[in-house]
Every structure is written in C-alpha cells, then in structure tokens.
Length: 226
Image (cartoon, rainbow, N blue to C red; front, side, top):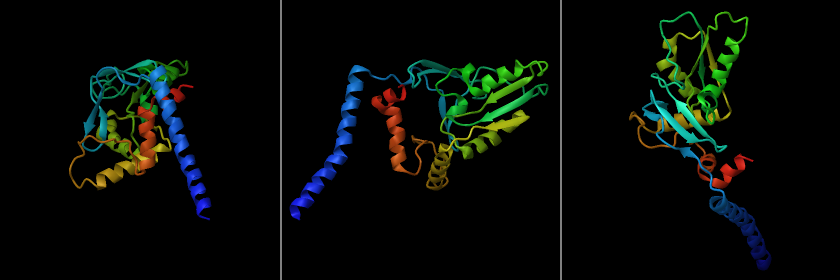
C-alpha cells in the first residue's frame, strides 16, 4: 500500500511539473530565438485618475508594439479622447455618436483611423442618404474599463457633448473589471486610488496570472500571432 501511494504521488507530481517544464522550455526558446517586441516605444499617454484609475492624458502621442508586431500610434485630443479631431460643444449641426468601451472600442492594436467608431463614421458619411456628411463619432474608449467606469466617465465628460446616440462596447470581461474596481474602492476607505496598481486585476488571482502572462510572456505573445 505504501509503495502504491508513493508511485501515485510521483505520477501526480510529474503531471503537475511536466507542463511547467514544457512552458519554461518554450518561453526560453522564444526569448532566445524569436523575442517578442511589445510595449510603449515612447511616452505612454495614459495617466492616473482618483476614481477612474486609468485615463488618457490630453494632447499626447505615443507609439507601441501591437500583439501582431506592428507599430501602432495613438493620438489624444485636448479632451483626452482618441484621435486628433477637436469637437465643438456649440456645434449642433451634426448627428453626434459617443462611444464608450474598453480596449476594443479605443482600438488597441490599430491606428486612429482604424477603430470601429472611426470606420462607422466613414461608412455613414459615405452613404448618399446621409446628406451633408453630418455624422460625427467621439471615441471615449479606455482600455481596462468596465461598465461602471464607463458610466462615471460619461457623466464626468461625455454628457457635456450632448450626444444624439451613445454606444457601449460590452464584453464578458467587463464583469471582472467591474468586480475588481468595486473591490479596490471598498478596500481603500476614502483615500483616492493614486498608487501604482494593476487596474485590470480582478478578484481572482488566477485570472490575474493570466493577465500577467498575456503581457509579459514571450511564448504567449508568440502564440497569439499564430
């Protein structure tokens, strides 16, 4: 019986260790022979906010390596929204669409003119039935935002633009982002959250590890391009 338990323990240990060893070998191989470029090349346009935690700073330009390896450049206007277009609060002649959302909305991995809001504006203004090319989209997307942050951001900045239509880019991970935000703010008493934090970490440490692997593992980044 003792021998059987020992052999079973060894098998279980091998089952646990083998994937770790395999991943380590793959990670080392990719780092040596095909290192993945990722991250900001120059200034990161993100800034800190006591409630929203992460926000784009106004009038910034930054370039970074996207997951597919190409260099993407992001601009922000004087309001801290993506793009170089400035919006006139007094102009009521255009049908104004305001877009809220996370990295999919802001367009992580694509240039300013490739975000879905910008493409939508181009399509609508190219429609002969849309006389005068009077559709205007405002991209208020910020990576890592869930619906709680989006609602707060809308009330702080978006409603002043008197949008005719508001779109929300919702994804299942918004639920994690919401839970993480609530957890952090409930645990911080009344002090503003200005310290260095990973504002995408949800309640689960396991999911937090997945986020870390996506951003730091060369092997995982390499797999993402396949």
